[in-house]
Amino acid sequence: MYKVGDYVVKATEGVCEIVAIEPLDMQGISKNVLYLHLVPVENKSVKLYLPESGAKDKLRDVITEEETLKLIDNIPNIEPVEISYEKQRDKVYKEALLSSDPEKLVAVIKAIYIRNEKRQSEGKKNGAVDEHFFKAAEERLYAELAFALKKNKDEMKEFIIEKISKN
Image 1 (cartoon, rainbow, N blue to C red):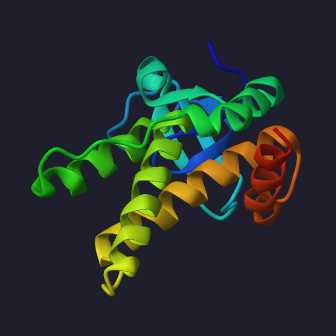
Image 2: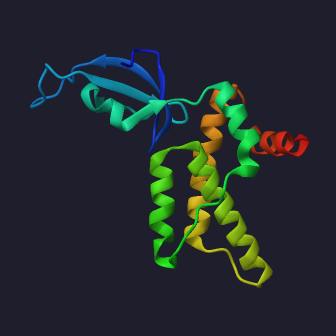
């Protein structure tokens, strides 16, 4: 089970610190239920509360430094997410983001990058949906990897490119 001081990933918020585990002091809420009080690393002004009993389904451990380096080394081998039908694009991207799985985020980033390259070569603009999900996937991926490697999130893209280039 989680404890105060642990860092976890909540799909919609990214890396969060557990700052307290306590009942909520709110009318109509049982004092017998413990809640994890989470604060996102990227936005310390946000306070999230999650019942401890449901935490396993909503949170996961932050990727380790070793796992991060293995993931980066494996990026060239990760297949872009496949979209069978154009109408599925939004749904597939959302599912990947909500999974908070770093490999799935890489697969989305790669798929959108390839799609955008093709569109640009045809003289077309990048789609707004693609741009939105590309930025969201990059943001979530780089934030967690940077946290694991104790780096600045803004350095991650360049770090990944350099590491892949060396291999």
